[in-house]
Amino acid sequence: MALKITVIGTGYLGATHAAAMAELGFEVLGLDVVPEKIEMLSAGRVPMYEPGLEELLRKHVAGIEGSSGRLRFTMDWAEIAEFGDVHFVCVNTPQKHGEYACDMSYVDSAVESLAKHLGRPALVVGKSTVPVGSAERLAARIVELAPAGGEVELAWNPEFLREGFAVQDTLHPDRIVVGVRSEHAERVLREVYATPVGEGSPFVVTDFPTAELVKTSANSFLATKISFINAMAEVCEAAGGDVVKLAEALGYDERIGKKFLRAGIGFGGGCLPKDIRAFMARAGELGADQALTFLREVDSINMRRRGHMVELAREAVGGNSSFLGKRVAVLGATFKPDSDDVRDSPALNVAGQIHLQGGQVTVYDPKGMENAKRLFPTLGYAPSALDAVRGADVVLHLTEWREFRELDPEALGEAASRRLILDGRNALDPARWRAAGWTYRAMGRPRA
Ligand code: UDX
Image (cartoon, rainbow, N blue to C red):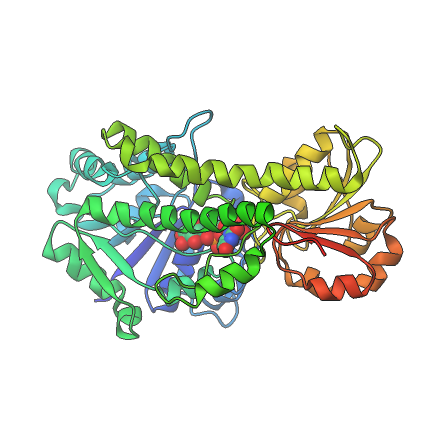
């Protein structure tokens, strides 16, 4: 009989995983502890902006006309324990307040709440990003708490999806990594992932610590690549070089590759910054802190980018020590395009710093306005890019939405007080803006 699957936690990761599992043909029951989320998802609506996710959900959520009916949601732990053969744990692991370490309380409490009800054989599969060693600890906890005892097993199966591409990354993953302790667990996971593996996704079988480490080391590598090119941007600025050309030329070397070499105001979001910090904290606990001291540098290069953008903006508007009396338009609020996520967003951090220094900041973002207003209620907001730019002394392009690349520099120039734009993402076409009379400046590039 086909496996029945549950998904615990319905954020970016869980909601996408649940819909993808239904798409692969499984009966799926998703659980969350927030009633509003369950209500929305059950009505086929997604509580965040993620391209393609709502369509996939509506294709499968029970009760929606024409759906497969394979996907349902609940808040009842006993129900999912009774229903599922495989339980995916997809809750988040944020950074602890005021510390580098990650907060495991959501994972711990999800696993405990589930385990207490597990009266029949099952495989619990951790997907959350956790400090190495967590799987071993949780496996012991499950056996201790589950009425079915040793018949409940744990496996670790990190998730590598990117926001904005969550559906595609989940249905067609680059690789599937599973940390297992038995052939049975491996067999079950091979069954779950038979379709993507059949379509060519590599299936890597390993132990718990290696599976946990693949995720944190992948994110550390990506963060390092971005900070590397941003360090080169600093050198380019000092030497009069062009980091965009440099990155292009580096990228032709296949050993380096051209992806993740976009210099600008650096990385943010709910993953990379907190994951490298949690990784350093964990290495410290393991006595291996020296191995990761370079990540401290990766983090500080990254944070320096935000400050540098503020400096460039202040210099551009001619403010000596503050932005008093200056109007600053900020295009972009989310940590990256095609997402409404503003967690640790470099764009909002820059906007906030300028506001604190007396600037009159007006932000516009295609999808992130609601979340931005909640997090930074004192900033000004405008309903369109044109409205944000009206009367501005300087325009900052801080998140590279397609909408911003397609703006008409001429129309914006008429609205702005000065035609001065700083591109914090190296994503606009300098020639277009300059042709319309704008002074265009970017990070790590020569001034024209
Ligand atoms: C990341 C990982 O890519 C993903 O595999 C993991 O599962 C979760 O963390 P995500 O946070 O969705 O995914 O965003 P990503 O596309 O990696 O971008 C992260 C940040 O880096 C963004 O702020 C982005 O603007 C920035 N970035 C990315 C750059 O500054 N330069 C680049 O060249 C690429």
